[in-house]
Length: 339
Image (cartoon, rainbow, N blue to C red; front, side, top):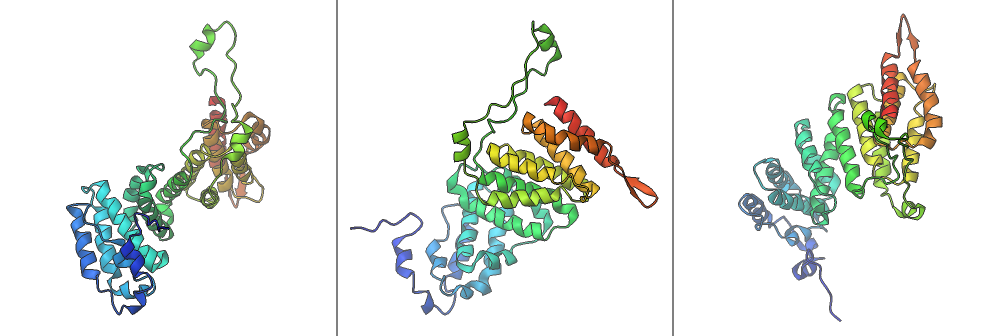
């Protein structure tokens, strides 16, 4: 009987497992740093996972060199002129270090500058969720973005929400919900040329069995909860970004899961909620309607809230608030008419 060894787990790596306790310092640090520097000239020069993996039993030995290693890796990722393949190898190195030292420790040493948000979001947006071979890049991007998110101010929340949205899309299969509402002809001239009115089609639902078989990763619930919470934010740009994110994610969900998202949005239309929650709820429903994700059978529960929002007015001292809610309700009304 032979032992099959995966590509990333070499025989040398197996031999050194359990020997880390005999180390007194990170003796290979110079070699690893040199190989990282050489990535700029060729992605073939990459550190062997074994060089770092052997310190899993004594991860503290690499602490004194952690900042230096991460700085070199981050500088490579930040360089726009470098090829994506080179950056992917840099992200692999970041993963190797995180695997040994722990992602929480590594995260504390990553840069916290919000100036990195936009480039990282653009990088994440260009990733292909179907390419499993690049998963280390996805891991590194999401780890770094999670740190930037926790250090962002309210003015930075819009790109952070975008990162959450793209994070969710990575976990979901690339597809367009076949249960969405199918619009009829949107051309008045085309409709007038018909001998009979063009009938709009109700949603062509996926087979119930297919819908139930579509598993939604657990991480999606966490992402959606954060985005739904952002619909209550006082910053309207943040709310609009959250509504956009809900539209993107819902378009890839099963019909049953999407219905739960709509239920959560409906909870925002409560007398206990603030005017900002009503505003965010209208934006989210409008975004779903625009994409055909608010099905006809849901209109009976959505329309009463829309009518209330169009008349929303709340006195606060010697002035009233509600104009933004009324505007958002008009936008929802327009979106429903267009769908």
